[in-house]
Every structure is written in C-alpha cells, then in structure tokens.
Length: 365
Ligand SMILES: [Zn+2]
Image (cartoon, rainbow, N blue to C red; front, side, top):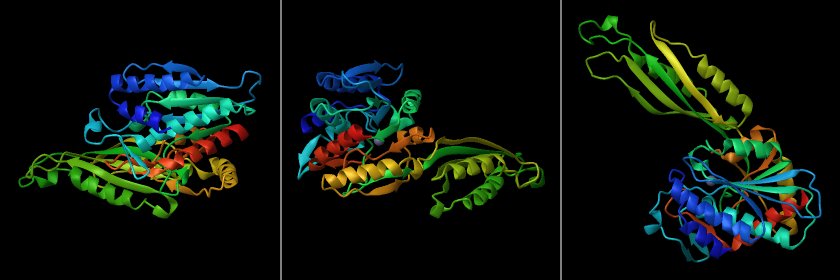
C-alpha cells in the first residue's frame, strides 16, 4: 500500500494544472487495470480526466450499485514536493495530498483487490469514481458524481477521517458564497453631503443585520469575509460590496438563509441592493448517513475497532450525493492530520484496517 501511495504522491496533481493531473490520472488508471478492473477515462478540456471504474463478479447479476467516491487532485501546485517531499518517519507518511486524499484512494484500491480475490459474493455492482477538481468546487465532475449517485443505493466517500481516532463524517455543513452589492450616490463630502447616498454606510447596516442570522448551535454561520467600497475620503461612497461565507447543517436553514438574503431591503433612502450567489453544496444531513454508519460501526466492532463519528464544517462531494437523497457515508478515507498544510500526513498502520472496513461495507450492503 505504501509503495502505491508513494507513486501517487510523487505524481503531483494540482486541480488547476491539467497536464500534471492527467499524468497522475494515468498512473491511477494503470494501478486499477493491473488488478483487473474495467476503467473508463472521462477526459476533460481544461481539467485532469475523471476515472470511472466498474466491477462485478462475472457469474452474478448485480442488483443495484454502490458508489465509492473520491478525488485525486490536491491543493498543492507542482514543485511542492521539493520542500514537502514524500517521506516516512515514526509510522507516518508525509507529502502533498497524502491525507487528502491519496491514501484513501489506495485503501479503496486494496479493498477492491481483496474483494476480487476473495470471490466474495457481491450483490451489487461497484463503481469507483476518482475526480480531478473537488478542491476547486467540482465544476467538471459534478454531473458524473450526480448521475452515478442517482444510480446507487449507497455512496461511500474516501475523504479523510477526523483526528487520531479516525472519526467518520456523518454530517457535513452545506456551503455557499453570496455577494451583496450596494449602489449609492456619489457627492462631495464637504460641499453637498446631503446629495450623496453612502454605500459603505448602507453595507455596514446590512452586515450588522446579517450577522444576527448566525446560530452556531444550529450549525448556521454567516460571515462577511471580504468587503470593498468607496474611492476617496472626500467623496461619499457610491458603491460597496461584501462577499459572504454561508454555512448550514440543515437544508431547511439553507433555504431560509437564501430567502432572507434575497429579501434584504435597503435601510437608507435611495440606496439599492443587489444580491448574488447562494449555497453551492447542500448539507449532508445525518439522516442520510445514520444507517450506513450503524453498519460500519458494527463491522468495525467485529474487527475489534471502535468507530466514532463527527460533524464536519466543510463540504465535500459527499454533500452532492446526499442532496439527492442517497445514503452517503463520508470520511471513510485515511487516518492522519494536517490536510492542506505543510505537515499533512497519515498514520500508516491504520491503512489495512480502513481498507478492510470499506471492503466489508461493499460486500454486505
Ligand atoms: Zn478532499
């Protein structure tokens, strides 16, 4: 497993660099073919190709489909390996994308191999989908994810688990981005202040209003993280804008926030508001993961492992599947820490058990 992981990490695969991503994709493709899987490469114009891998035992007739989902792109640009090399120390493997989520893909590869070689009686067709643009919003892969998820009875997502105990992610917040643009009227701040409509003042009022919608206990957070406005100190600001980060744990809250945003009205006479954007990933609500998690916990217990769960504040492609109402279990990937950072690593000796857990889920659902 470590040897395959090393090869995958050495093939740097930043989402924005098509040729590098394609190189990593070809390597991945070869690993699956070598083990007897049917691999389809879904080439993309400006991104790395996505890989769709299908398998079921020859003799059986599959009654349904299970989808295993992950991404091979990373947030590290080419050349990162020079200062962040693949290395193994004290039971940990380090390197760009090792935790998020190349080790997860390796675990899935070995789970597949084990199932194939053990002639386990699979009831369902297995589809593995490895995409190239999750870290930048899944624009080119979304349609493939959604169409495979729709055909599936359950979706397993190989995103990293959380913490040293490897908690699975049974709920994820929905994530969105919205922009508020205020149109005011410029005027000389000294000679004719009464003729101006101050867009910055209007925006400040709107932000104060929106800030109160946050409810961390319900999993709702709204943050104005980028603001812009005005041109000179002696000119009343003609325009101003804010970009908001939106998060919610429940679909109903997500819709409520969107409605409230679009219903905002200006506080200052004459000011005009424009609201753009909204949620782009709906929440992964726990009701869509509960049954699968219970099964995973039981299977893990049979292997002598205690399996825990957590809520993740960020979204993944698991959100896309769950939003379609499909049972989805996320965080089934590697155990480690430091995703998207210089100390990103995995705990090597957890890999076989996590692969076995995935294999057991695929064989029994
Ligand atoms: Zn990831």
